[in-house]
Length: 105
Image (cartoon, rainbow, N blue to C red; front, side):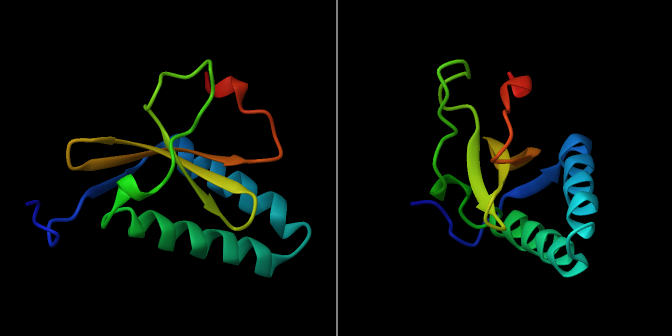
């Protein structure tokens, strides 16, 4: 049985950080509070991945490697895209669900 107290290490890529800042910057044009909520929710959800990252669904797309990325919805319309390698969770991207993410491929 796996030790439940053992946590995963979370590594947020520069790309994910830059995309988060970009999305927050865009949101500030509408509402500074919305931008703050996005950042706070990202931090909380990313931190939650240390406990049970396998609990979120796979990112399904016929052009992606099968079972490589998982997704986590944050602040209604943003996806936190990550992969698990051993005991490390790599947060690779933060995407707006309303946009095409084929560039990821």
